[in-house]
Length: 198
Picture (tube, rainbow, N blue to C red):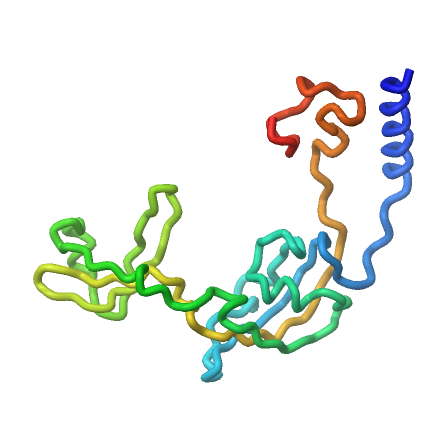
């Protein structure tokens, strides 16, 4: 009897949540989906990025979609709130890692790429995972090229001027309620995206 009671409770609960939408959040908390306009500058005052060209960025707070310092800075803010803050390099892209600077023989670089190499320019490398990594050309001679694969903002403190444009509840996982056996559905009822590891 107990095993059959749980699904009925879950059904009643989901019916209740469907008929009553959650009220719009008044301030940013972990798990909220927010839209933010921003201008990013370095200690020198040089602007390295802004949202003017592509519109506000959207991310789920605490979801690991932005650098840690940015995630923390928005907590407690409200719509139209403005804030200026600096993220130390440790909470941004970390220190420059000397191991990420590699010397590559020019013989391993395709001819069409070789002709475009210049000191200070960038070469896009592909990691074994398929991820594309921009590498800065540090030195170039007749035999080798020195490439820096550190993030271009590694080793730098980053200052942001931001405005909160919107705060909403993040969309719920489409398979919420599967429970993987906790609420009466068996493990065989879980889809590949259930989040329970099956």
